[in-house]
Length: 358
Image 1 (cartoon, one colour):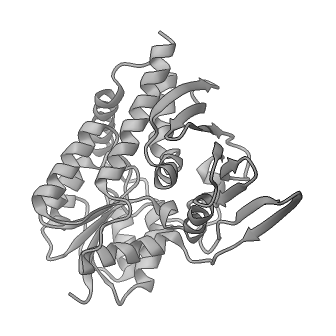
Image 2: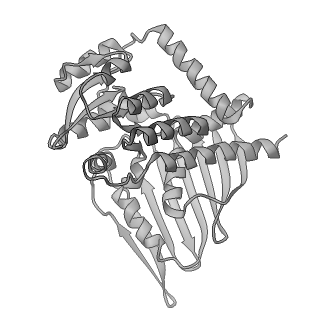
Image 3: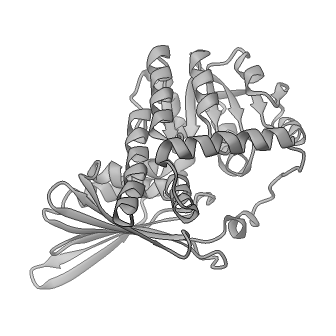
């Protein structure tokens, strides 16, 4: 297999800004054979733009094409399409979040195991060169005392205005209603009957903060327990404390500041005499690095170094990795089993909050 024949389901913002342009840059690895979107005008427009003749609004028509893999990058839930793609014998790259509930994760993983095809989840931050460098520096800290995550999230539209995005108001109402019904069912399956503000927190956990949960797992594994969770601002802000092996504690905060343009997402790791921090750019950034700061002590003298590894785009790197998994049998860095752990943690965070506030 020289080039992977790929189809894409979902032609929205992340496909337009990241996946489709990077696929074009990787023509030696991927051939784009079909596009699918529930907006007929959008899929036709993107088909013209990328010179793709197969354009459909029903994913089942796309899966019937002669192709090797499918990229799923549409709004949740994606479970139905992911399972169908795997059952159709396609390798699947599914944008985060993989799903909403642990039960959905099990269904997707089961389909992947039965098919023998690659299932990879789009946690691009784990492919970030800055994060990979930070991993090596954190491994040098002998006595980690504190892990801190701060995720300040503005309204996405503030950043999307920088791009010439194509949108059309032609999605059929029955499709919108069907998606709402599927999502409501998946949320109920995940966390049961909870108040509206808790549902909003769960949406932020699985939609945005899942990135932070993923990089924490990539660096420290799965936490031993959820110590506490607090939410405020009617479910638009959350702070949690997680306990990791070796008596490590992580304090992680996510808050929505809709009118503040300055997106900020940082991960800091503190030892008694060392500190490693990384600042991630917004997921819509292209060519923007993740700077890493390392601080320590040389006897009584403090030192500090600031490192920018390179400007390689993490979305492009994960597409290269997906190719390597399919062609060379490499294990995905972010597979379905790992994503399941993340969704189980999101569920447990909500459970801890509900138990403390009964």
